[in-house]
Length: 197
Image 1 (cartoon, rainbow, N blue to C red):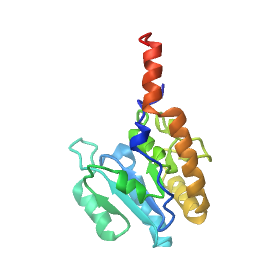
Image 2: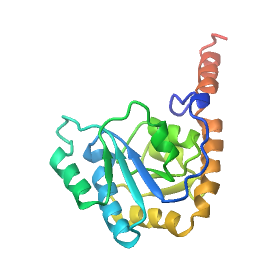
Image 3: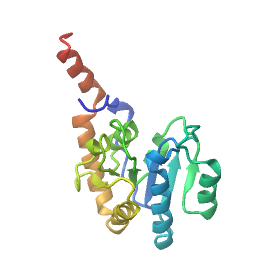
Image 4: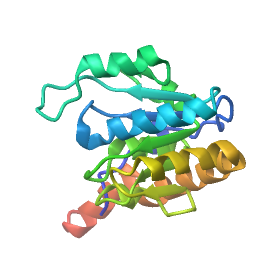
């Protein structure tokens, strides 16, 4: 059945955000979310494309696999990414996003990616269980191996060099969200399968 889905009417498609090319990751700051890989890819890409923006949105965590505040602040100080520790509503940030990035090592079907897709954002994520359910390779985004900074960097670079992909793949993301992640369709299907209808 895929993830539980999103109420698509609350996540309407937004016009493509082409400039500056902006890459966003929304996650708790845990190693397994691929936050360090995102930061390192951002550092490398930003050195070649100073106009690119990298947004990291998410709170610190107390988990043993958490990334420490000093490390995140050092990234911000170096100037290659911006950190928003807390956002009540991520939609304004997704509107200013060109491409949604989730380099997680493993997930359920990630909700943040479903929301980004509903808002017509292309996706770069990992070829890992759960994550790969959100991307049809080369259609609405790109799949990269987990923990592979070079592959992540190359995928980001493709969107910067071929900005027409941002709009085209974004529209495909919305179509896929309508097909796979519409919360209403999913609950109807669940009720049918449980014989409640």
